[in-house]
Length: 203
Image (cartoon, rainbow, N blue to C red):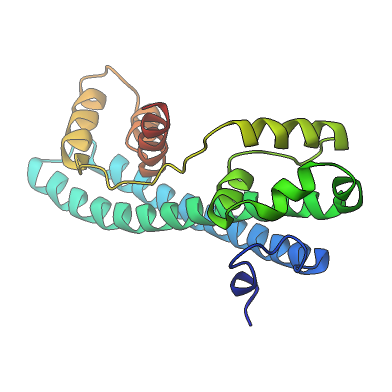
């Protein structure tokens, strides 16, 4: 049985701390790999953008095609990164619960944790941060979360306006209103995805 299959249902007592720590390390390594891959793609996109400065419209269109291919890969990586980040947060907070298991069992919160709906338990551990907190602070956090109705914000597909953004950025560089490095940051796929996430969380 795979690790995540064990987490179907309420697994508070059945999952071992060692298993959680192993999965936490695996996720941490995977996140580091994804981060490096996204940085590599962003560098390729930045280089292509710089090559388009001063080029004619046909060459710009060719660069746009190449950049869009890279953007598709970055967006897929970014979505995987988001999913894995939530898994990492869930596991990291689960580790804290297991580390404080003895003390938690002596408090009323343990029964709440055992009887909570699995989906709510998952959202609760994704939307809080117990790492580095004392037992008292962990209790405060858990009690606070139980009083709130938490919900997961899904990562939606954004409307693709990359061509307009690229042409506008090139124009801004060519007219001297912005330098090429700042323009490259503006059209960063990762920044665009982060901006979309921020907008959805605020809505």
